[in-house]
Length: 174
Image (cartoon, rainbow, N blue to C red; front, top):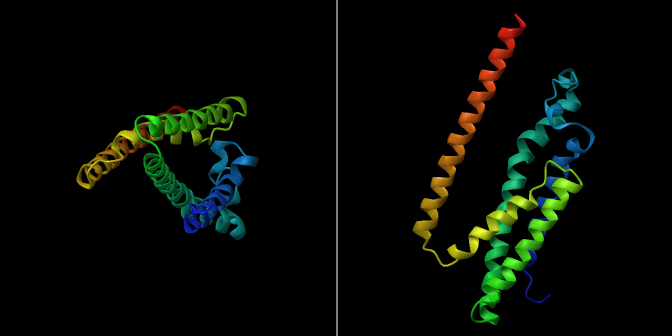
């Protein structure tokens, strides 16, 4: 308990509450019904305000905040393990924890059928973090920039496919 960083726990709690609020609409609707136009909610000011808060304020910010906290927690854990143990013991403990996280994510995603599961993705990402724990800041910044570019290109391609499919559907309807 003495080694816990209280501020990180508080921020983590805020992020988890934000993620819960962000996921509440998913609990009662299908993924595709997240657009307020699907149920004709655009005429209701309170519904639109709630949708705006969830979709624009919480959607990316809380997940991003929690992701940063996951990385910070992983680095703190690795640092503490390397102070206490020598050799491969820190890697062994770290990877065992990630394998448990991966199993929880698989159970959550495939047995409980929760399409919004993020534990699996955190575990897979965490598996790649360990080798970079002592990397230079310059290398890490280049890697982050590269991943951002790859993500943006992938999102752009996905949006283009979606718009193409939408245009084909409109054409087919006419």
